[in-house]
Image (cartoon, rainbow, N blue to C red; front, side, top):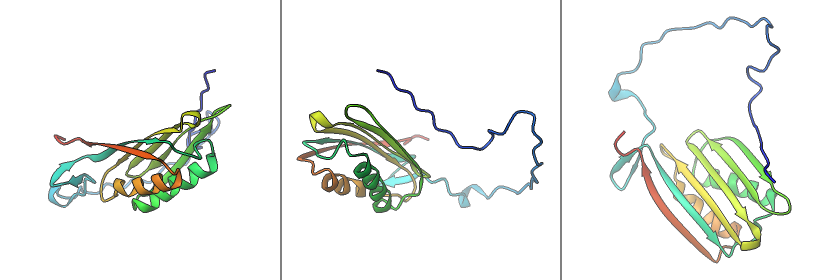
Length: 158
């Protein structure tokens, strides 16, 4: 069965044609390029838009426990010193959870197959966030027998 989920903020959802306050706009000169913070990351001396970890958990437990998954994503965000904007999780029936923690630094996504003891995660972060800090949190929370991590440096030529 196909299930769709739509998540959007309440901004801009007022009834059509309702009066809106006019925003006050100030024009500010941009900072010189050398002073601008672009939030790129540096990994082993390589400048990139961000570090993307593809994480596979094998022999994992608790993969149908949506509360455990939410707590674990929050712990990952804290460990990585990232900024949580929103978490959205969906619990499938009879089993499985998919979701995302949206971060100012990008995201952490998870998809679980509890019957197989398998979870697939993407941890993509830019700036000063530390995506590697998520790996021990995930290993411990889900008691994974085996953890595979593949790394992609995104935007090296940007």
